[in-house]
Image 1 (cartoon, rainbow, N blue to C red):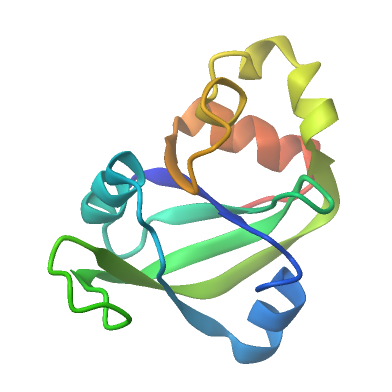
Image 2 (spheres, rainbow, N blue to C red):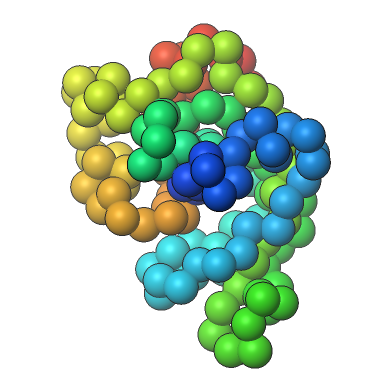
Length: 137
């Protein structure tokens, strides 16, 4: 199993909306590095859901339900999407400020390349963020 982090601006698509809809197509990625991460996602992988710009915090965990396929929002065959479903809401959100203060997380992609909308996360980082969020997977 692999672990990932996706970033969503809550005013565009929030965790609350995701919770109501129960599943979503993760589309609109137009960065090659993030696109390559989408291509590596496998069914069953777990995904940290991070609210960017507003909140700036991990709020829950999603699960990859379908592996990558062509992004139906564009005719350009270079871009892909995956489908995600709700897995678990964090009991306590984990803020960017909090993550920056944690020595164990200093090598995490979110802190090194914050502009990426999709990025891999190590199992150690994933588990530690879940611990900070008081959430057992």
